Length: 186
Image 1 (cartoon, rainbow, N blue to C red):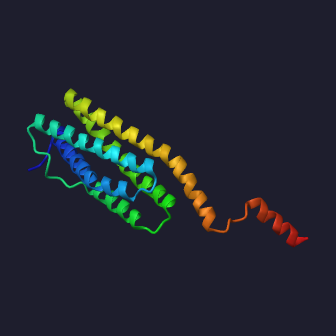
Image 2: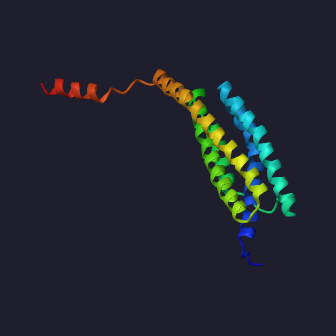
Image 3: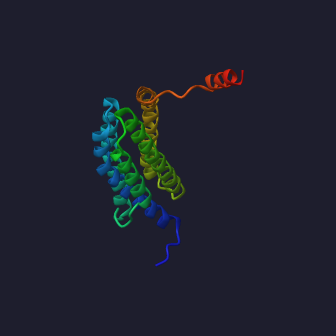
């Protein structure tokens, strides 16, 4: 049967988000466990609690629509989760692994923000004001999580760059390379 209405698309997109969130409920504990930084670990645990609330909000919307939340696999989130799992298996030092995990987590957050922004707009157009309010609340939480990850990344990325400097011979700066060329030419 052909789907020919914005309502059909809205429900389809909600199902996609629902599946994405349920995938995250399974992935976030693994991310928390892989994080060496205590603040990052706690951020993932906090986001797991929020993600469970996101699932509940979506279930509430489906109940109001008299629809089932199942029936759609979110391939985008599946790919992001697999990519993140691969990152966690890499043999990086703790600080570098944490930086990589943050990058993977922020890709997830941006994907979710795009999805929630879309369905919130659909809800508004369909006159589903209560849904729009619930979806906006989730969208704001996703934005806050992204901001928190950005804040954590500033310190963790700095630590990762220092860890790299401790394990590698530093590359001469451009000025130092230029000076050595000048000496060779003289």
